[in-house]
Image 1 (cartoon, rainbow, N blue to C red):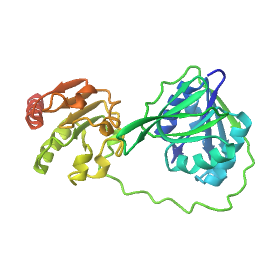
Image 2 (image 1 turned 45 degrees about the vertical axis):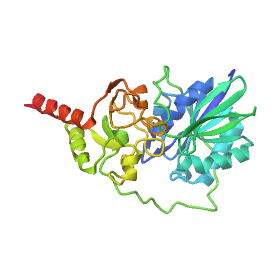
Image 3 (image 1 turned 30 degrees about the vertical axis):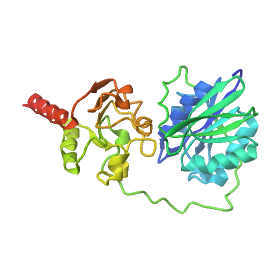
Image 4 (image 1 turned 120 degrees about the horizontal axis):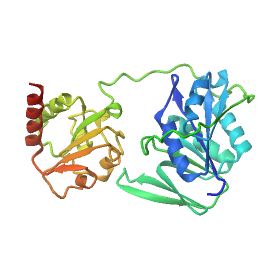
Length: 322
């Protein structure tokens, strides 16, 4: 990896960096010797200083034309950066922004593109990407041929946030002359309706799976989640039955979570589900099947009927509060 530089493209919204920006820095540190960050926006000085805690250099372009995301203008700036610096790899989040930018950037930079990666590896002069295929049932390793440059998008939540570096990286403001967009303009944003809970921000998650046989048992588990100060989540079969909404689903086709405590009740541990919760600080699994795959990732396991365990935990919590 001698002298290789990774250029990550930071994302922000409403004055705050998106978590994927930190995750990109985490992967970039592992595949390159030097990490630079492209930050595009308007009045983003404070965000540049924050990013400098995680990369070697922040290159930020501050322009009113970048106030709202517009792929035409963003591509202008990114192409200048790529042509000027010649990074070995450009990393973006596999988000609406990254998906709109990655392909045209790769075409113009004459670079191979690999998308929706959960991790990257380097062996000699070869880059390989780990991707989930067949609906998350298989983890495939895709090896790319030798190239001067690569472009990759990373699935949000695939890796953790890196620790800050010491000393902080350099912050450089670039004055680029950008042209007004010709094909599209932003009229405004329509925010989605707020959900009752955001499981990705919860410190404690009680998650249910196929082991919950009857919908009438769901409220009892939800009560345990409330008593623990947590939220109720689930695996895909529960959503398929219509017992909980899609925004409560954990897994490769749902949300990736990293709580302090993940209590898995009646969840077998299918690969797709594990990919969404494996980085939790503490995983406790309850399942009647001693051979359930969930026990392979759990820190602690209980082989018993989940409803018996739920009632025992609730009784214990009540006695502690008495």
